[in-house]
Length: 574
Ligand code: ADP
Ligand code: MG
Image (tube, rainbow, N blue to C red; front, side, top):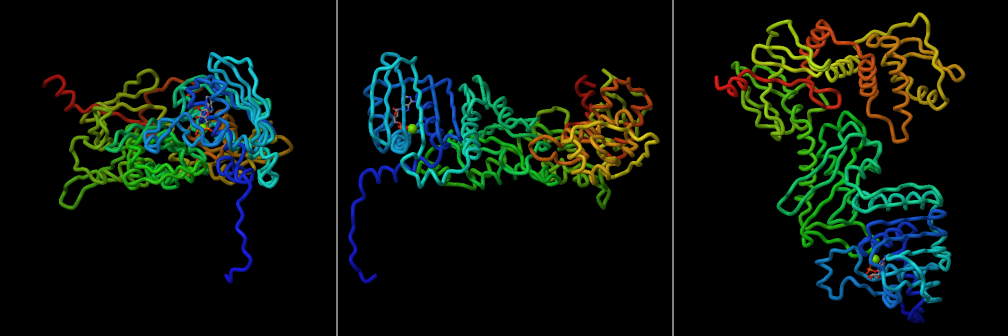
């Protein structure tokens, strides 16, 4: 630095404006985000978003919020004009998304912006091109505001070049809207890309919205934990519904969407070993409501990161909330999966079962519990949790079959109730997993006409299907099934095979294990046949279940419930 002929110049105002605009407006999705925030800040109950060409040529966000007067409208498009705060202190008590007063001005600088608004008294339309006010005129509109953004970055070609393809920009808009769809379930949303209606949602509740946005998470559990610093709530999927990546996870801190890798880990840690057998990521929408002083919501408009003053406490709370929600759902799993072994010295203790994938919660927290101790482990959602299943002899070979579903029988320490279908499913699952079945050659190979996409799926998972007993050829549009597993009858096998292929055709990743899918399909197929369960079948099933100490279905739902005589005696005052 020998200090040559350096001249420091002030940049022209329009260049400064464009640089500033770049901070808020990165791409069409960021415009949608800002406009949606404004709509919600304005108290809208219904919002409509329309984008054309990935938002590059046109974005419209219309709301039914409070609207603006003509005067407010003209101020709104100027930089640093906001109706939301006036002092620095206000920022900390903020209940709104916006406060910088930059978004509209920034968008106006780099597009042709048209806003039509009405506060219920007067209606006004304004047009701003590249930051220059072109027109203000009275208009007609119901109360609310419509913001239209034409030709984003038309005057900043360098930025326009950096936009992604229409498809990707459009996808980012969808993701942006989805964040609002789940975090604001009481607001109605319509999203259209070109003329396709992506979402048309009436005001609803979180669980519904979760299922709309993540249709592949078919079973959900609610989170709700109150912590000293605030609250953790939301929705997660049960561990059998997974994606290959983390696109099924969203986190919000005090209502704002945030990206935080540690939070993803905290969520996944809550699932513990439930995920280990599977190679996938769970779904979860988690809301943290915390004292604003415990979090630095970076006031940079584009940065979605946050900084917590006590990150460990926050992440642990998320893990705890997930674990406790899973535990409520799997109270039975916790106790039931215990096997009994004899300690040296003759003391019997319950110990962690074999490598059952569904018992993480218990394994982490209830490794050994003295036998006979009351069921202090569960969350108490079920009163009869002192269970020492299948350790004694059957007192009678008489069983009672109730509703063609429950098998009730007597053991020497209590009454035991088994859910037939859940048990059946688990037995099939175990056999598939241990490969303890025969492969049956079909004398007459089964010809199944299938669409090309299914044939492709079959080809993709040919090895796994083969290991499960299904061997086949593919012959111009036909699948010719040569062998089936001995677990299934021929008629059931065909349906199970097809249903399984369908399952793998779903757009969102592969199911976590073929055995899971096969077992549940096999079980459903068996249910469909509607046969009445005979006493012998019931006994055969019970003996298989007892032998292996199977206590939950492959999805973790309980198979067995026990009513100990001691509890009965207590109840009846004996
Ligand atoms: P901020 O949201 O940070 O205040 P914006 O530039 O996004 O800044 O908006 C400026 C102002 O314009 C807001 O404070 C609000 O008063 C008004 N405004 C923007 N959008 C709307 C809308 N959809 N409905 C009513 N008022 C709006
Ligand atoms: Mg705003």
